[in-house]
Length: 102
View 1 (cartoon, one colour):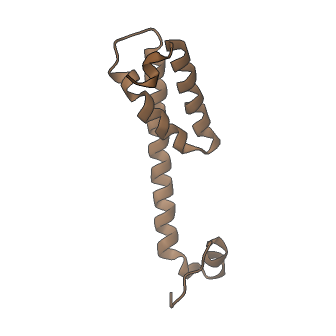
View 2: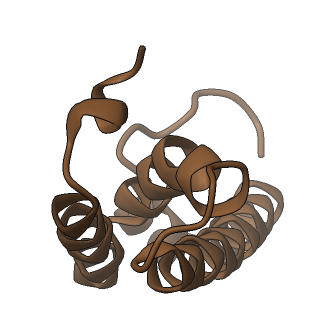
View 3: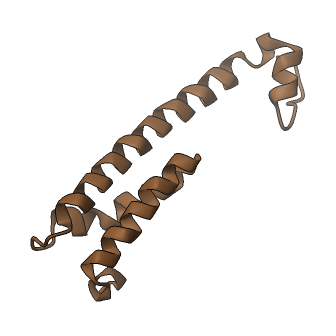
């Protein structure tokens, strides 16, 4: 028995909405939590009134999470491969400056 099984459906919807909106505060981890936690409620649970809204929030959270994963992966790849060529700017953007020849 999971925690969500003991929560009323209205509260599930409210919590799902909060995680979805929280993801827009540059906290994509909340979208990951929303997708993982509410996936079963959105797609596998017997139908109930709030389920279509929860399903919508879960789907949109998954799209937002995918967007952030693509953006962050692209940025990390570009930064790691081009930091040395950026010279002083690359050093300013680095938390630690690697030693050795670039």
